[in-house]
Image (cartoon, rainbow, N blue to C red; front, side):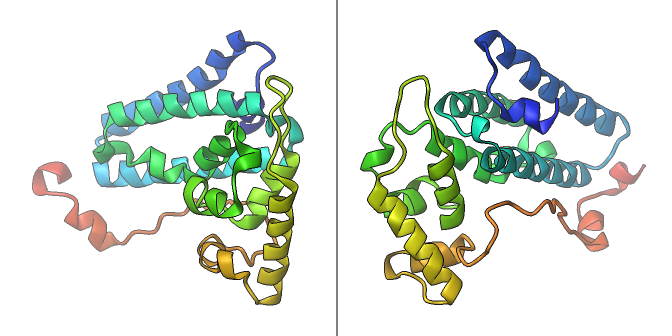
Length: 220
């Protein structure tokens, strides 16, 4: 399934399963092929880390680029699908596919924001520090201003919090980080002028890393 198809909420609950089932089937096929070819677990794990990074970037950027994706209902849909992906990864084993939950941090935290009922009661420190520490202030601002809910009619964050976000972005751009958000903005790249993730899923490793992960039996 394309990132757009997976990132956009279905029109009916019955369309949830096919998209995520296709994703899981692709993971199944890839892992089976690699294991059948006796690819060392070290290399398989790094390949899946690249795959998780790609999924994280593609789905996260879809949310921030398309308002129809940035809804409460779609947050529930994507969260349910990510739970299936993480369950698949847990069953496959960390030794083979790595820690999917950690690699999917941006999209996981974004949908956590979307499905949060109490957005108007949350301070910026709560959002940036506790709920979405991997996201920059710019990314939070984009989510907050794009958010809509035609199911439960929940509201986005309070106007004062939006004003704080704008002030923090201006301060970060000028090199004077807002005191309350200095550490969070620095950790999350708050000075960047882009709210999108870079599509760079390279996971470097050395020949020595490969050699250290294999024994003679593995080579044969």
